[in-house]
Amino acid sequence: MEIGIKLKDARMRAGMTQEKVAEEIQVTRQTISNWENEKSFPDIVSVIRLSSLYGISLDQLLKGDEEMMEHLEKSTNIVKSNQKLIAAIIADVLLLILFVLFNGLIIRNPYLIMGSSSVGIVSTCILFYQIIKKL
Image (cartoon, rainbow, N blue to C red):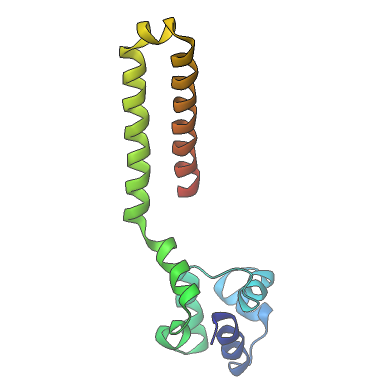
């Protein structure tokens, strides 16, 4: 059974409206609707609140829904996310050092200027992507 169906069934068994649930766990009614229709997934804190509110275990709520488990794993895997951010920062710093060290050589060759500029732009975009993803 999918998470949306489980959430809706649990809400109905608890005799609650989407508005009441939204008020209790401090989200919008539209958010509850999106979760029940599987347009989006709740975060781990919301899943815990829903479990408590509906009086069902997390195991009952989450077991068997691989897509939801993947979502929770991605959203809670801070160490892996931090490693990617640190790697992007280190790569950008190393590239900056290389550009400074080989500045004289790069300036003389238009292909090296274009290549190093492209590499710099791509690595900076990757760094910005990691930072934005972190927010």
